[in-house]
Length: 452
Image (tube, rainbow, N blue to C red; front, side, top):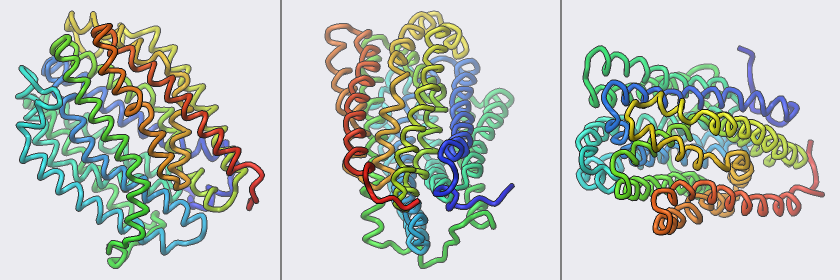
């Protein structure tokens, strides 16, 4: 493999550079999403449709704790990208060391808390009735592996900030492939049911962690830590926190959304509606992988060039990322509108779930062609270190629009009101983001001194 340096982020043509960054990110996200998708198909066909709902109840809790690693990673990697762009390698090293320390501290504390209050947390997130027992089995075992996942998510963003997208892709692929193999062994061959599904997931997190550790001790890594770098710096922790809070807030709102959705849908349609939401949620993770990949590829390019003062390259990066993402999102929209029934039958043969899910899927993905603007716009502010606008724009869709809509519309339209809330929130959030992104470009990226 050819030697890749972070300097490439400021010198290579933007279009080729974005593809070089986004394709490995997309492949990594695709494999990770396929893992979640196939895992759900295995669980649905080998254990039962209630098991799908059970996993859906657990995901927001475990993902929120793991998202601490992601938020610390994204916040710190924004600093690292800009520091490398400004030739401040010691600051980049200190930031990386602080990321490791913070991730360990927060995730271990939250895992202990999560295990102590398991019987209260699961029902709060919709794990009621027949869903409770399988959800508890899955929750407890997966929580043991969450600190490993958090460290992997943090390390992955640092690898990408170094300009090593292929290694970041491998880090996402390893747990995905590992989980599928372990799923087959534990669920199908050993017939361990929910225990097997849970241990397969936890085992895959540990495999990813081993790879991340190997990378940073190998010659491929640009950042070579020393023990003093692990000591917390108030200034760096503050900057990581302000930027990482954006990602953490987004995941917190996602977890709150799951809480509301699972409870609202359980009250309106029981286990069938919760299962339908679980299937649609998996498709949201899977189908949009190329758009998320472009967003991931966009972050280090925008951050590096902003730190280097190459403002024309930043503008070009924004425009190119949005163009590519819109094209891909439109193609995804067409496929999902055409084949929702076929997709649903992959997960389950339950007649009630088959009846409800296709219509829900069409509503949820109705505004897909325009979401790229919202994703890239919010990511831009995070990439350049502007925490407050990044936070507000990140929360716009889920927090400011979607949650109020799912609390209001079902009172008038029942379960249909829940599904209608998705495209309405997407449209409103995109309009708001487009306005602020355009204003930012005119104010700070136009007619600025350029260092190319």
